[in-house]
Length: 464
Ligand SMILES: *Cc1c(COP(=O)(O)O)cnc(C)c1O
Image (cartoon, rainbow, N blue to C red; front, side, top):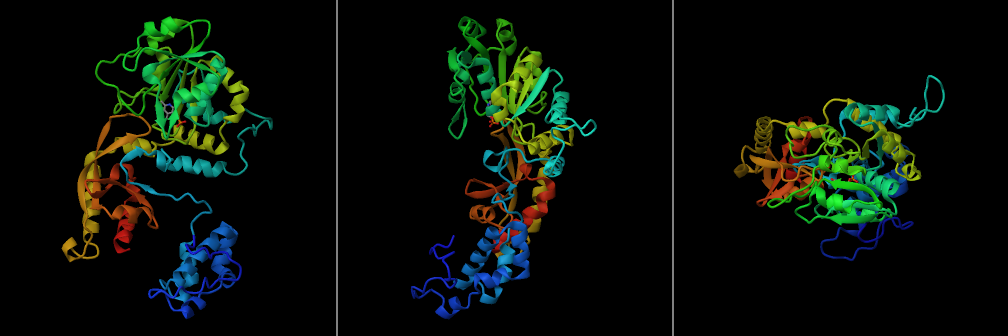
C-alpha cells in the first residue's frame, strides 16, 4: 500500500525522513500529518469502524495520510479525505459498470442479478426457512421453493437439482453414474471452457474413463453405438459454447443416441430453459429433454441470468440418485444462491434478457443523448476543451455464456484511449473495451438506469 513500506510501523506516522529529493515536500509538512490514533477518534471514522471494521477504516486513513505526505492534500484535509475514501462495504469486490458489450463477462462475474434476485438475497441473508416448514415446524426439503420454480420453468424434467456450478453438475453426474466406468464422448466435444479449465480433465478427475469417439469435425450415431458396452456409464454430449466448427462437419443428435440403451447426458452450458428466438443455435433444456436426453446440465449464471449455480434436469430417478449421492453434500448451494435462483426464475426479465433483446435504435438514442451531454462538458466542443466523445455503432456479443459467433448490433460512446484506465480506476469503475485506438463504452450491457452514473464517471475521468 505504502510504496515505501512505512505503513503500520509503530510510532512512525510521519513516515521516513525525506530522501531530500528536489521534488519531495518539506519535512515540516510531513510532521504535520495527523496521527492515526487522532484520526480514528473522528466521530465519522469511529462510526465507520463499527460498521465496516477497523482494518478497512485504517486503510483509508493510511491512504489519506499518504496524500498529505506527498503534498497532494493539506494536513487539515486528511480526515475528510479518509471519510471520502471509505468504501460502501467491507468487501474488496467493487461494483462496476459493464460497458464491454460482452453480456456475460467472466471477469465481471457473468450474469448481473435482477433487482428481484438482489432483494431475495438480502431477505435470505439472515435466518430463513430454507430447510424448515414453518406451518408444521418440522424439517423440510432444502430449497424446495427454488426447486419448484426450476421445475415449473422446465416441466419436461421429471426431477431437478441444483449444485455449485456447471462444472459441479458434470462432476456429480460423472461420479454417480460413471466412476470406474466409461463416458462415451465425441472428439469434437472435448472442450476447454476457459482459464485452462478442460472438461476432459474434470471428468477424468472423478475416476471415470473417457471413451473418445469420432473425429474433431465428424462424429456419427454409429460411432457412439460401436463404443457402447457393459463398461459404459453414459454418453455425454457437450455444447461447444465458446467456439464453432464449420465446414465439413457432422454431429449426432440426442434423438439418435437416446435409443442406445444407456443414459444420455447433455451439457448445454448456457442454461436456456426453452428455445430463444434470437439465439436459434443455442441448445435449451426443454428441447434436449424432449429429444430424449436423460439428464441436462447447465450453468445458472449464463443466459438464464441468475446466480452462479449448476442445474441438473432430467429423469426423476436419475436426478434422485445424484441428489442423494454423498458428493452432493459437498456441491450443495447456499441459501443465498437458492434465493437468487428462485427470484430469477419467477421474477421480471433478467438484466441479461433485457440486454439481449434491447432495441439497437433505442441504444443509439441513448448514445446520442449521452454524447451530446458529455461533449458539452466542460466547454462546448473538444476544440474548446470539451470531452472528445461521439456516439458510434458497435457490435456486442453474448460472451463466455454461450452463443459463439452471434453478434448483437449496438451503440457505444467512443472516447480517447486513455479514458479506459481512468474509467476503470474511478470512483464508479467502468469497464469498456478498446477498438481502433479508442475506448468504447457499449450501451447494450449498461442498463438504461445507469446512464446518469456512466456520464458522471466519464466526467470524473475527464477531469482527473
Ligand atoms: C460454462 C460451461 C461449463 C462450466 O460451467 P460453470 O458454471 O462455469 O462451472 C461447462 N460446460 C459448458 C458447455 C459450458 O458452456
